[in-house]
Image 1 (cartoon, one colour):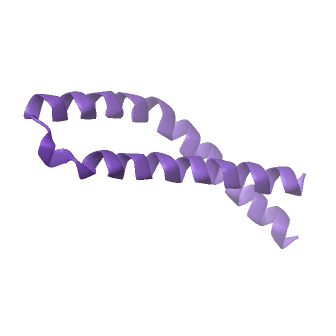
Image 2 (cartoon, rainbow, N blue to C red; image 1 turned 120 degrees about the vertical axis):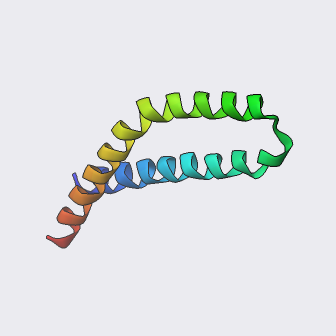
Image 3 (cartoon, one colour; image 1 turned 90 degrees about the horizontal axis):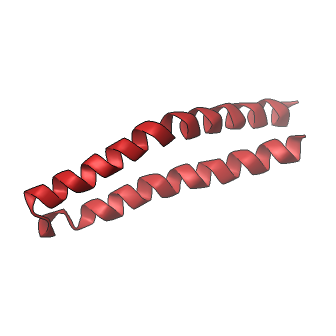
Length: 73
């Protein structure tokens, strides 16, 4: 059980970090975008983040807390 919790929490933490890094990489080219392109990109990203991030963030937090609790025992 402990191995599963640690593996799952590490995998989801990596996924969460990847999502944030992808956002930072997208924003690197912000100067090259027109106002309408910038708006379209952020509308798409915000729509996706609003659906995915609460679930992924909460599950990751719970798995990390559970893995920490098991590791302390």
